Image 1 (tube, helix red, strand yellow):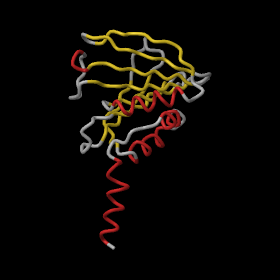
Image 2: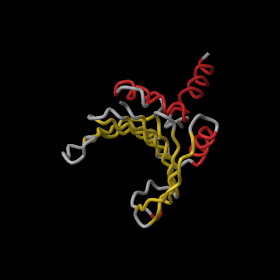
Image 3: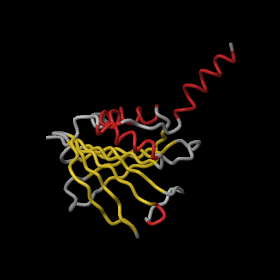
Image 4: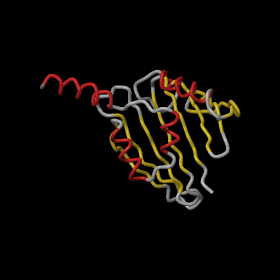
Length: 171
């Protein structure tokens, strides 16, 4: 009996250290309030890390960010972040992962969804350029970013980093 309980524990709990998120889950998070987002992130193996509030009067969105990082046992340094505007109520979910499989899975999901490819652009970041692929539908925009960490200012100990940014515009 103890062995069966141990197997169940390992099977259900150990994968929860900074699990990957699907496109559907990221979209679902844009409709969550702070409390539900906190519970969802914690249940998926992330731990609360930081909150930031932009009080700059020139920034009309006045975003509040809540950042959760993958559990310490997860060496992949995944991050999930919710940004909510105090003015427009727009919600942005930022999922950062060094795992190319996470990135490619979301890219595949986009191609098989109602999202339309909009554009590709490059943005400067540190000593490098970031490639950005933008997709959208009537209410939600998805941006996929990929870059070489060795050439940028932020380094999480990996060679590459992928960001999936899902923004829901609220009227």
